[in-house]
Length: 298
Image 1 (cartoon, rainbow, N blue to C red):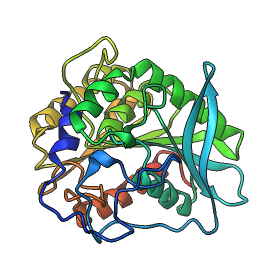
Image 2: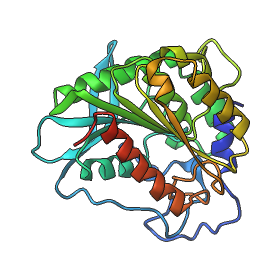
Image 3: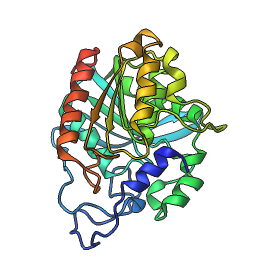
Image 4: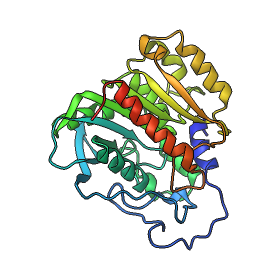
């Protein structure tokens, strides 16, 4: 079990009642952004943020990469053109309601936000009820190379839908935090914000390199938002990355970390017991400021 996968498991604190009301019940849906992943229980009863779609163009779309039709959830200000683009990368649970809501929040801030289903070729994470099986049967089989190509495809698609591909940023959570670092070393982005993404670890054939090894290749500065109480990503790992960035590319040297001392892993996930409102809200504002600072302003 990889470190980032373990953290999605550790953030699921058992013991909450399943009688949590219709807006927070598990809903297995076929469309992206509807319901919550079955493996992500227990759900919080009241704290989830719900962002309306009025004034937005929002919903499921598709784009083709290497002959495969990739589903994605996108949200953008209705009727507006030449808007900056943000790639939104999910946790291990895929593009469910939390990720869709994150896209709508970004759209209300003036961005075309798109969250590709990066697991689509391997399966649907929302159908899994067992995290161990989700990790072994699906997440571990997703190649980094495939993910990079799909994100390239998402950027190209956004450019045909009113997005300004000269102003692209990326943000991601846990599994998606690691991908944020990787894509900042690969793709056409001007800024990245990684929420508690793994920085180092064991290599596999499908995940051959980790962020710590890519500091010399970073093309865009990354803001890392990490929790001081994250038991799977210790502060020692963050410090190793911080020191490595000093010896990296210009973008690496411009990268920064913000540590929330009392926050655990997944502190932005407002639908889970790991949510910490103060850290989540502060991180969100720092993310928007980071985009603005690095040329991805609405």
